[in-house]
Length: 113
Length: 98
Image (cartoon, rainbow over all chains, first blue to last red; front, side):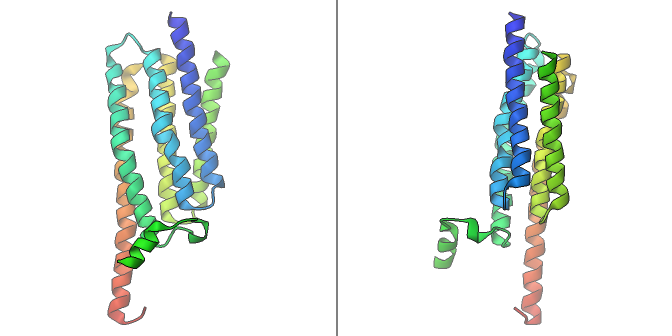
């Protein structure tokens, strides 16, 4: 039984590490801040959830795995807020490449106001 | 199974190196803040993988602290950039240049 749980855990950890790697590649290769934010969000939520599930399966009978749920909860609450503020500041201070945006509804809204 | 653990470590190390490359290249401060976020996510994943490898739950509070620290860091950098931009606009207004 422990053997099976270990294999599942290592597959989950591998998937989380692969998402981290994908974020690193996207960070280097993508052209502007908004697309980099898109790729950077993957390991912060999904990758972290996979890693934490892997840790939980490895530590399974230990009662301290409850901390893992707390970590994921904090991350789910804080990451969208931080990304929202970073994206808002990037747009308002003109650090977004407008030639890469197909539909810019925010600019239309700002022009109307 | 050992090879899979090594693969996890290599993937996380490569992710950190790529994030470090973006941290050096820039070009804006928000790009750097974003790459610090990714580095922090890699660090959380790495410490978590260490805990899973050794079956050692003593480092889990470190993960808790790191997940909150990233939030404070990126929020304060964003607010700092917004404040600086506004100050610049106001000083332009006062001196009469656009």
